[in-house]
Image (tube, rainbow, N blue to C red; front, side):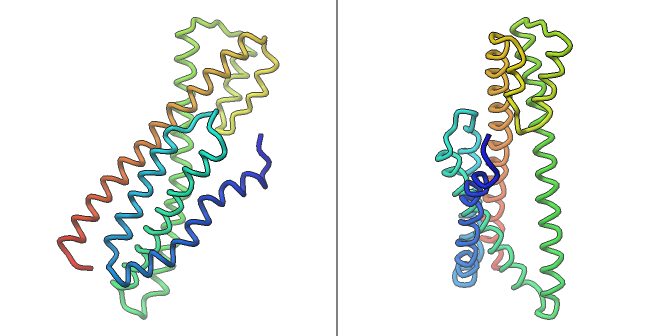
Length: 212
């Protein structure tokens, strides 16, 4: 139920650290090599992933902001350090073309990641709420089934639609949606955290065996 302006302000907890940290990450890469800022950035991503894995419908705005900050720091360090590695590894005459390709593929990867993660959350959330309804032996009418599908069809769950149902059923469904949202979110962000840890270990080993 938050307004777009309010959401934008909250998202600044992600974008502001990225903008502030990026020059610092590039500076560290030039002075100390890219290993420290990249591995450090990945550990910030791990921290953000773990914090977001504990997110639920009762989480406060302060908690969401707290989870966004390490993600922003991690992305700022990793991306700026990756740019520094690219700049050091190619000829100066090819910098513009390489940066353009790097930007294009990173943007494409981000967009693809959002689509895949959204579908993943919708799929797991839909399965979870069906499982919870069956476990509770709830028998829904056709209009009630349509209402549930409508609510679960988007990540922006419009729980107000449940107000058209009887009060007892509405309370149960709101509780089930909360669980159906929290569990997939936990799985997704713990997976991201585990993947970041794996990449951090590989990066440390790679930079330890080869000077870049």
